[in-house]
Amino acid sequence: MEITNTSSVEKDQQPQPGLMEFQAAERSFKQPTAAEILTFCKLRYARNHAQELSNEFARLLNRGSSLE
Image (cartoon, rainbow, N blue to C red):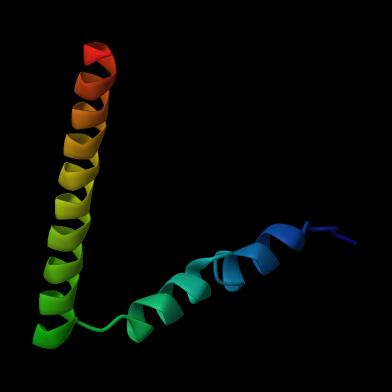
């Protein structure tokens, strides 16, 4: 009677863990529409502009406090 290790054979027949999830995520990915790209660009511009204004305001506050 010959005893063989079947666990390695079973592992080879099963897909790798995470492979099915990756393939499902790959199928669900879609290219952004032109409107979505435009919205993203507008939001990025608005955030950058808001940060610049915040920095300018802080600079003016610091300058004002140093005059006192």
